[in-house]
Length: 229
Ligand SMILES: N[C@@H](CCC(=O)N[C@@H](CS)C(=O)NCC(=O)O)C(=O)O
Image (tube, rainbow, N blue to C red):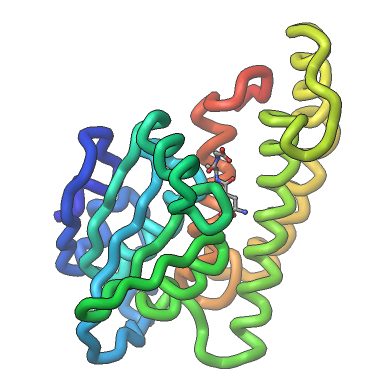
């Protein structure tokens, strides 16, 4: 099983033998329509991220759903800060994926890129270029939704002035929740209804579902103050 994917207990190898039930995602009968494209290789993987379901979570889920063994390395804020100041993070952020090939390790960042890579291995990303394009479209649309929330969580990181006080913070986030996010979610509903399978794109689960699952989960969990579930 893959109990480590949501663990807060730190480092641990995650050898999930294709047990998608452990992810909490129900992909129903269409699960069997997926064909994992994992090549025969000696590669092994370590994903480094925090122990909460942020940007690294859809990548962990893709590994788990695909039954691809990986080390789910969770770091504390202090461990993250140490890695960052030591220059170990290519973009100064997590998640990062270490791809081990014998003696050599390649470290890659940017969660959408990681999600697409693991999605390919896991059979969660179409091989047909047009279908892949549609999955990318829905995935980047989810990113648009997520960026609105991330900007509200850390305005200075995006070049905006810091909140003057808690009232201003609440007002800005409530406006986002009342006026901006519902329009994007209405569009998502239209896309899902138009697709007709219950998934965002095509007949079965893809990385686009995982990316939306992460962003919507963040809202529904009440993780972001003043953005009501
Ligand atoms: N564009 C990057 C952003 C990654 C990112 O901002 N990660 C956050 C955690 S979800 C982080 O590392 N924040 C701490 C910091 O930037 O100091 C991606 O999509 O992976």
